[in-house]
Image (cartoon, rainbow, N blue to C red; front, side, top):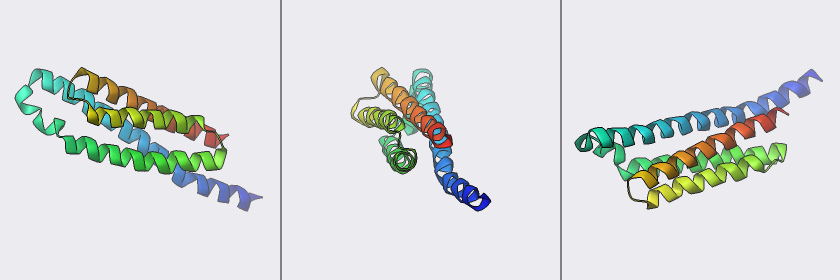
Length: 130
């Protein structure tokens, strides 16, 4: 019995780690987005590197990979689709952000997307614990 419990716990560890990494990256993305908006408003000439489209494209790529792996694995393990649906909605808004011009709409889409993605990962962790 102890062997079965420890095997199950060891299988959950990598997925939980991915969710934690994804949540931390969501927070970092949110901080980047808000800082970019504030810096742009205060120091328009210094905000250029923060608004580089490559940062957003790379960040979205990382979010999609982590989201697909962690949330997809979660659906397979616990069978609950809500974390995946919420996380995918967040990824959609984040992808929409790339198409929008820099400004309030872009910031709003990013903040909403990152928040939904983080909520999806939190729900995924909670479902895995049950």
